[in-house]
Image (cartoon, rainbow, N blue to C red):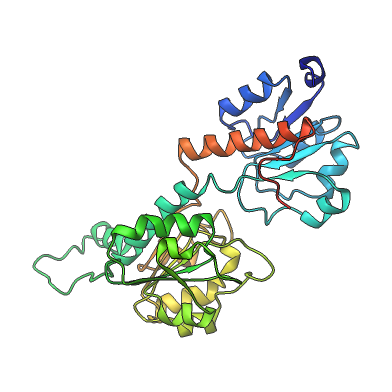
Length: 327
């Protein structure tokens, strides 16, 4: 396809903070980029700019659905999100219209894995509770049995989900002298031997894990998977970490499990709702570390996500398969 033909393509970019290398790449490929300027993105502004575009670079967690596709028009050729999870996308509608849809898995795994290890340590060692003691002038000296935490060493590490993110975490744990790595997925991963990991049932995951890391997508099957009954089966020393999606957890049940000592602590990068209100009960629990969905928030990972989304669109516009199709 000639450069002249490529210049006909208009790409709507829904967020002004998309890394510049991705925008430059689209322009080098002959695309005109129309960038929405609001932070956070305003849906009415996005919808107003959509008519006539050939592709959409969706950098938002707003619903991506038939309303968006209708607003763009029949000339729309491709859409790519700048995210791994696509729980906010009406995938059946995209399939019905046979609209190419891309996303950005794989490249997020390293940034999220680093953060998950950080949450395992922060929650297991009571970072938040310790900070609260300092803030309230309750730092006690000459104590031995004080803020006694859980170590990763000699622990059973469990994973709900063992895709790219779960495996990247497990890879990082290879030199941490863990006792055992277990995981639950619908089917066994053929490469689990590379990580010394063992496939188990969901009940076994709950009952055996000293650290339990949620690293799976939000689907109809996983929604609310961690409810009161599930927390009731966990060890009292279990450190629960969620880097998947907030909707995978019954948050009221988690709060109760933390308050009553049913589980030891929790480290959360995702929760419900997002943004979490400052007065939410989760914020008042000393054995819970809460951070604001920062898993991919590094310059390297964010740039890689943006470049992958841009490549998805260019491939589709040139009649090639997307690098990472969503279905």
